Image 1 (cartoon, rainbow, N blue to C red):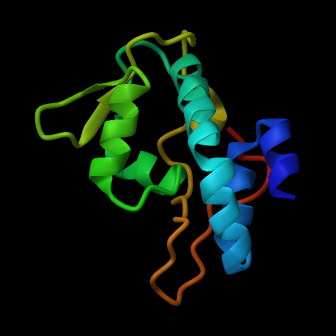
Image 2 (image 1 turned 120 degrees about the vertical axis):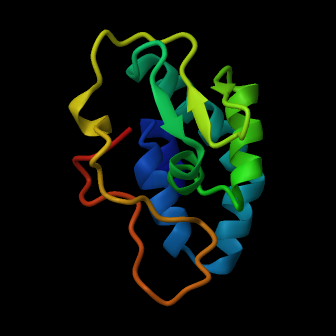
Length: 132
């Protein structure tokens, strides 16, 4: 399922499956796929949002299952986003969209994380229609 989600470019589904996968599958996903999936997801975000759109680093952390905000900020900068001085906001430099896509609206449900250290049921997206 992880491989299929990756092949489809369905990054939200990939991380949703990875989060609930058995430990060994999580390790394999982290080793084999996560870096590539995150890079492609950042490229999609660069095209989907208009130039100058600011994305909270905490949102990117949850969306792409980074362990912490610093790691998410470093990856965003490496992917071509500019960061504010406090590294809390990543701004789209390129921007392919003239308006924000409806499935990327700021009121989207809270994404989950790959490392789940609490007992509540976080989800990456509300439903499979919300795909990046």
